[in-house]
Image (tube, rainbow, N blue to C red; front, side):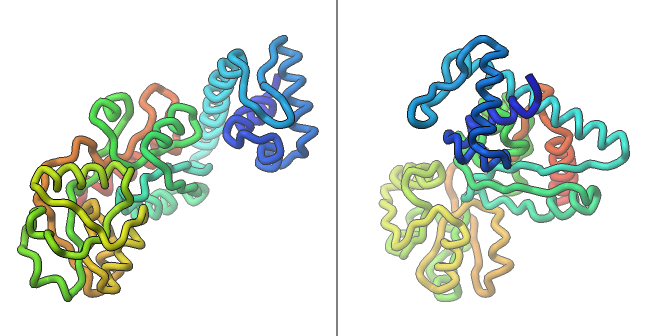
Amino acid sequence: MDIKQLHYLCTLAEQRHFGRAARACCVTQPTLSMRLRQLEEELGVALVRRGRQFEGFTPEGERVLARARTLLSQYDNLRLEVDAMKGRLTGTVRLGLVPLSCMDLSPVLAELRHRHDGVSFEINDMTADAILDGLNHNTLDIGGGFFEPEVLARFDSLALPEQGVVVAFGPGWREHLPARPGPMDLTGLPLCLPKPGMYFRHYLDTQFAREGVTLNPVLTSDSVYRLMRWVHAGLGCALIPAGSVLFRELPGVECRPLILPAMARVGALVMRNDGQASLLAKGFFEVARELWQRR
């Protein structure tokens, strides 16, 4: 058994396809299949359910996969620690972010790169559940989004400097909104909203319904950037989480805080706190904490 075999196994779990897994590992499919069969022969159990294509893992395979993920994480951490002993931090920080969280992480990325120019970043748009799954399976280093307090208790977390909801609007809508609008103040205004099914949209629908206001958007999107672009074009007003940096990039677009009860979930960065967090994750968290405390 060697590290490459465990890497092939974990990559197959991520890709769910032999061909894609082989390409991701930069080997041929026959090579990947052969090495996995060798692993099965050495362990004396079938790990992969095979048909004409990949069909999943056997119960034994799931247990071996979980241990393989832990071993690979420890192996990666060992390499990072050795690099740290040499006075440098290298590697790729794997981030999973909820697109609507409006996190401005660019200062954190820039500062970490300034301190350690061997660090790079991989940023993935994901749901909160997928982020937690990625952290638990060591396929992510850092997650960012909206999380329940009981979830945050299981991880190291860093709350975003800004929480709540804002109304984003262009010059043509300024006179229609008070300094601190509430749901009733938005009645009849054309709204640009997150898509139904997203946590933030569910929160908005619930709070507005309690005020007797039905949300009838003229546009929906899962991208804050697209919502803001349409606001900039004069299509209407957008309801988005506080903290977006796009206001500085779109001249004429303003925002005002919307008076609503606090969300049950908290906007935060999270990483593992069970000893499995990588040095990269810890370094990222350290920089984020330093920068956010200055705000």
